Image (cartoon, rainbow, N blue to C red; front, side):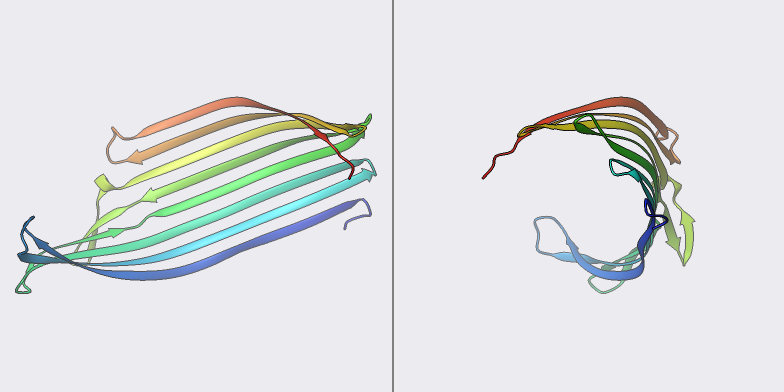
Length: 232
């Protein structure tokens, strides 16, 4: 409590993790329709993942009078996920001799940032209660997929199989509702207006795949309701 009429609060939570796993797959290869096996494929896959998820919130509430209230919220979320996946493959004949090898390494990553601000106000007007508010939110997501060909322990970037996708979105909202009671009937009506602006951008080595997709639109969401209270 800051004063008898106002409170200020902070909240945070999150987790940080690092884990890995491996899988060894053995596949026999032969001519379709025949029971004769002429070679094998041994695929050893190992994955190392690092993940960080953090959330923060600041809240301020003010009650200047018994029939009025203000509420302010600010939120921020930060999410990171990075991994490395090794995938060496070895082909052998039935004598155990190596026929061929290939080794791929993937480094995908995802970064997400979410920021939002919200203010709400409610007060008694006439025989009912008016609630109004506004909210702003921003989301930025970046997904990177990198593939490497590995030969003798040396990585070579495979640009044709790699890409970078970024998506951003802004949402601005205004909303209001009014509720009142007449005898056993409760009435409620409201309207919410949202404006959304977003943009997605794909970057790759192939210029034919590169594209930027912007969007912007505004929607209205009306609402209404009536309830009836029955005494038991």
